[in-house]
Amino acid sequence: MIIKLPELTNFYSDHNRRSEIAVMNALCHFYNFEPGSVARGYFSDWDFSIQLSENRIITFELKISASGTTNGSIELARADGRASGLTATKSDYYIFLNSAGNIGKLRIIPTKELKTFYKSPKNTFTTQTNGDKIGSLLAPLNFKNFNDIMILECDYNSNKQEFNTDTFKPNSYAKRMIHNYIR
Image (cartoon, rainbow, N blue to C red; front, side):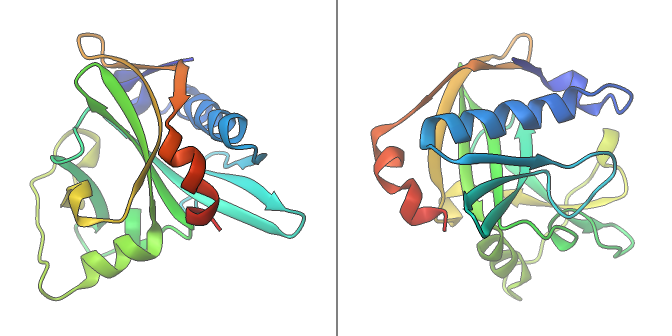
């Protein structure tokens, strides 16, 4: 599947849902997980799940961006204080698909780690918002601040702002460590 960034803000299409399915299926395919479910419609708890065992389901919040791994942003809440983004999710993990030149990198960070970092009194964040994020409180996202793991990479076309999920491939470190990381 080709994930087209401009299409992700078209809330009349099913491009978001199809993107979530493609990422979930790739994660399951390369790491021998069982696909779970993908959220439908407006649902702020999580985007998709995988089945680790008969009684263990793991949930993910997926964020896709052309921003690199050192200059991204994350939604903390609505500007008026209402829960949204990180304050609304009930996911176990955030999974990010970001660009790095002509490569798309899929990274996972435990949601608990993100919440701890952004709730720390030493970290105060405000970012101007525009486009579909008007009215949101955004914070800078730099993966160097977190214990993340890069699990898949794919081709990225920066001119068209498109990730090609058909080219996903794992790396050897993630193959060895993913089952220690996702529990």
